[in-house]
Image (tube, rainbow, N blue to C red; front, side):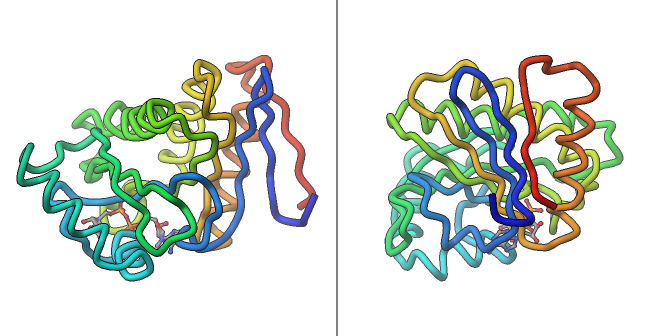
Length: 200
Ligand code: APR
């Protein structure tokens, strides 16, 4: 396995990969966008996805918001991937960090769960996630990593179509934090059936 990639094996036959990279280049069936409720684009990963995918994504976002209003925090909707390799973009809205007193963990968990359930509904096999809420929305990465990994491991085990979830993390620090969180989840015994391979 290439250096710096961590693989979490989730029986039966599911995989969660942690790697460093630019999610706009991911070759998964769908990539997840850490959007805001307007779905009109923004900075960070949201801006990068709209720039790389082109105007077809924004056009569909406009239609969705026109029909159903702003996307609430924790929900997910899908659009085309436009010019991306990924055929679909799943847009979800993470919580803004408020000290942990406003159900941030539950809302963040729901973002990952809703995104995976939507991918399953679309019959997809693989989905790539960024680290939702840990940039502009200020969620501490150490806390977010545990929530994100637990939600993905738990949900993936319940799905049929989706068998691979990738965390495409933009910088080495974030990858290190997620890798450490995965090791801690393994040793906590919370998910007794998971295993971890890594070369770092
Ligand atoms: N690929 C992968 N990860 C990326 C990329 C990229 N191309 N660009 C940025 N990131 C990372 C950031 O480094 C951070 O770790 O995505 C993570 C999430 O950061 P943000 O994009 O700021 O997302 P979030 O904290 O959820 O804030 C959402 O930011 O731009 C706005 O419209 C967006 O208002 C919304 C808010």
